[in-house]
Image (cartoon, rainbow, N blue to C red; front, side, top):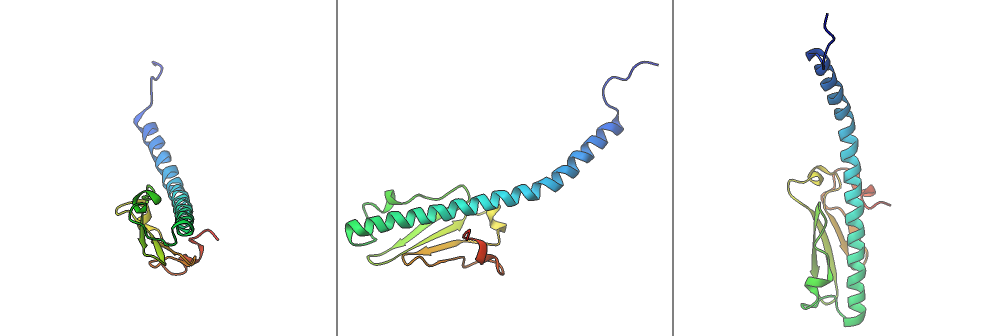
Length: 135
């Protein structure tokens, strides 16, 4: 008999099955960690943006200012788009999930923060809104 070179078809199928099983176990945990990281990132960006708006208010006496409105705030993250609604005495920051992204299935939904520090998740599913802000 000649010595065997390489893998047989059965051995290859067994390796593919084992890799598939490991991937099916690991991927959901990986996706959950990516979601937690994306939530932490957008919450930090919302608080940073709110602080920048408060600094602007202490200097200018109002939250709105057409010249600095574009440069004052970040546009968002890889998973969320940040929008700001500003007038003289108030602001509302809204972080919307990007369509088709990983966060579309996230139970926290979108994020809202206003000038009084009130934060929320208007589209959160069930009781998910309580843990979305990392507190």
